[in-house]
Image (cartoon, each protein chain N blue to C red):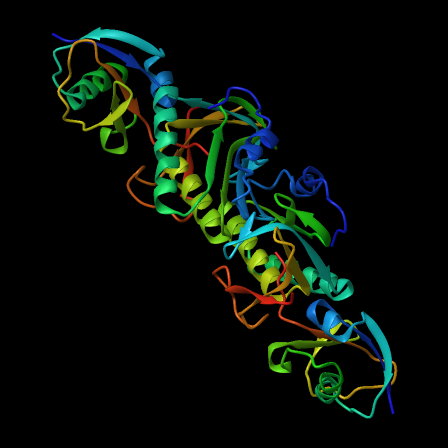
Length: 80
Length: 80
Length: 153
Length: 153
């Protein structure tokens, strides 16, 4: 099972109660991993309202995860 | 006959060889005054390419001139 | 991405080239109110490595799309108070049309795509993460977007 | 209208209001070339009393047409060299769309209507008054206008 590094930003960080973690998961895609985490932390945001970055690049939600990947879920951005 | 104060800008100043003058004229409109001056100084600009200001406000070319008016012909502007 | 105030004059100087005849700058300032609530200040959080690559991509796109000489953008992170500069964009170009259009393009894309999040602090002691309705990164947003606070007391 | 360089930071501060969330500035800089000729510098002449009332009319129109907080404009007269700021416009507004549109409106109207004339000095020692093709003051010019030198050796 892949070991994934996660960073949480904005409301995800507050809802998870942490800014980062390393997690061993049987989720094989970014989408499945978010579902798993949402079940655990009760994230309010649906994945449809977010994007996902893997190893600091935007990637499709169905991207297959590999051991050591850095995964960051991107809530709707509000810069500027 | 009205006595008119004139100021010349840009190429009009160079073509007239002066920046201002006071002139007694029998021209009764701004258009007629420009025709008179163009005959004297050989201005290259046609009045159709210019506007005219009387007493520091843009006015119509057929405006009747009054004694003491300040008349300025406005070549195409090139600020900015 | 800057965690502290940046000297804007130095950023402008990077754009000040002899071939440039027009310069357009945009600054986003922290406003005293948002949606009718009095704002005391705010904090920006960013996913910095992605913000840097995405910001560079936006500048590269501006160079491809518009006849510009140079473009620079800065976004603050951390705590800001009313009146502080949250975002700064400067574009120089031979002619003004390209400078205006590129500057507008960059701020619109920053607002739509840059992984930066704003938490507002209100005068009543409350805070909330602001969320925008636009589907990020997909459209060329020519308006201001519709922003709403998602309340987390 | 300013016969000498103006502190731009002070002009910007006039616009820096707590109700303003967006700020757009435009600067026109003296370019090193125009229509392929190397420019050494230039001189602006203005009919100042009319330039002041016309400039104020343009700012008033911007306030009527766009939801802005404040707008300031400055135009240089006299001798300028390459890189100097010939014109400066700053607009602040609650939202960025109004700031951009008003800033663009003001520079377009200044170029079309303000009684200011530019004489270019070339590196070969020649000079000429620049003349623009647009019919001044009549249209909302969204482009840069077509400018040509009328040669007076």
